[in-house]
Image 1 (cartoon, rainbow, N blue to C red):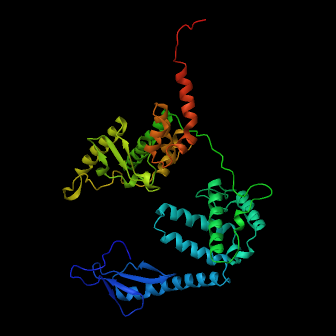
Image 2: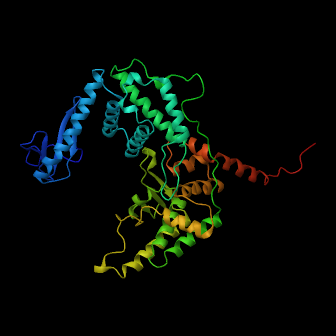
Image 3: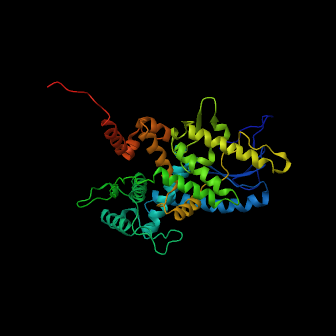
Length: 405
């Protein structure tokens, strides 16, 4: 049952009103219509996003077709007549309804499944028993070499190859599909788990050394962003958006979720509402530069409020601090203007970690500020060389005096 609704009304009657259409129910509280089915012994609910009965009847017909297809996939696999396409539909449904998966994890699974389909188009029509280990190795080699033929916006040619993360996630997706085939008795063992006699199935992950702009270059980029927006003011907003990432280590998708209520001026900390894991939601110290940035934004909002219609307050505790959700185009234009090597949103997160470590903050603490769930293992892997360089720089300051012979 949808989590947002109660089972009974205040009078004790059921909140769900049956209709003349099978599997179509109306919520008495909201007036909205929902579809309800039972698949493999479990209830599945689907909000139809309407309170108009005639519209709900049309939408449940579309949803019913999807459900019947899923039921047919399950039955086909159970009978041994199913295809890998049936396994894909089962896997997709399981991922969407899995309460243990975060939205970002579900999205990542669906993207990996899409890449698997695109790079191995014949796979869907194969029976699980036809997916051999050699065929898997051939597909993985093609994927590593040619990628998905994706052409980035503005580019003239498609990208060749794919990142190790992208390839390995697609391989993990295929492994999970074949696990379902084993579970349903379509095959006796998972061919993805067979150890290759030569080479390796997954793509080797190589740790890239971070190459970040200098502090002077970053300030030049921020200044150029502000000049780009001199007329409308959005350049200033974009520059401050990037400054916030550099002063907090927040991911670009996390910044729009930060409201003024997240700022605790008394405790001198800012709450960052993460989404990747349970530890992603964390607090970051209100560093002097961050404190000055937020106060500058408040003053800008106050000045803008002078021209506001109806005298609306310049900000509310529920308002997001920023009125944009990304700034990459503004960053790109500023980098082009200043001649600085292209910078991305995520580079500002790396910049935050780098400055903290070079300032003497230990890696486990920086890891907590970044919202990592591994106690510092990833941060050590990514930024460990910085600690070694910092240690070497500090070592020259140590003086034991004249040692005894």
